[in-house]
Length: 201
Image (tube, rainbow, N blue to C red):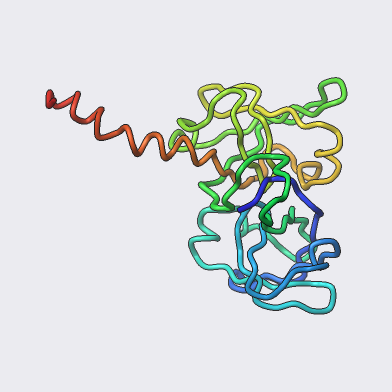
């Protein structure tokens, strides 16, 4: 479990779509093999440590759901270690289970913030509400607006400067995780709607 508060930007050292090695500093302080770590919003297991870097393994499901297919040596990735019991949760409860990809449609300065418009598929958009939580590349953000094709977030200067959002441009793919609460609610109430539609009581 994570909070969506990025600790540092790591750099991809090597990646062959199966094993991903990332150079880092802060997250290595107490990181151990077998622990979970969020890499660009994806929860992965550390399988090796050494030489200022750590290695995780990815499977086809990871690549298909995320923007990992575009990673190459030198790519920046947001990193966050898993939460410990008793930690403050500065963002929201993030699983690190990416639901799908979105695409940056527009990024524009708005006073001291940056407003980003992100498009996504309808099967994700139905869980997204104004002033709700969203995770973009592992960063916890507040949704400021929702439209027919996607949503908008306002990014404060600190978040913009300390995450890979500052490296994104229109057309770039980003990893999206919606608030899991919405999915649970939909699952729980759907049988009741089915009964209503079929006329059952």
